[in-house]
Length: 122
Image 1 (cartoon, rainbow, N blue to C red):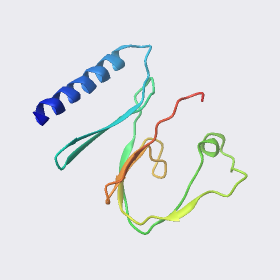
Image 2: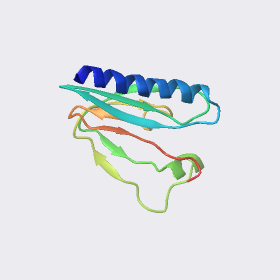
Image 3: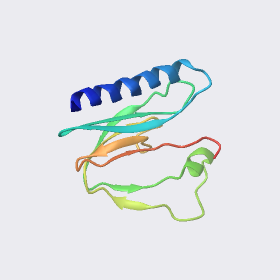
Image 4: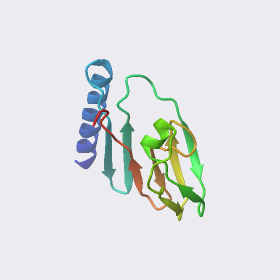
């Protein structure tokens, strides 16, 4: 019974993804999680009109990181407020469309998944 529901949900999501990619009026970004027993399946897409190239990076534990805001990234100017800084506690795997330190989504070794979603113009 559970496998049947899981397959129906997956078919619905895949069907919507195909419809959305064909329809030129829709540019949705989505993130979803499906769970079946101990298995987790995460899906994520971007709301861009063109393909987004990118790289998958393995990030090590105990590495010092500094945040860059989207405004600073686009303008090339530093923000007036000091950026966030931290040291990574866990290793992670990330998808980075704009370079090594600019992930769109990823998962750390503790199982935390984060996917960035934004509405352009808001």
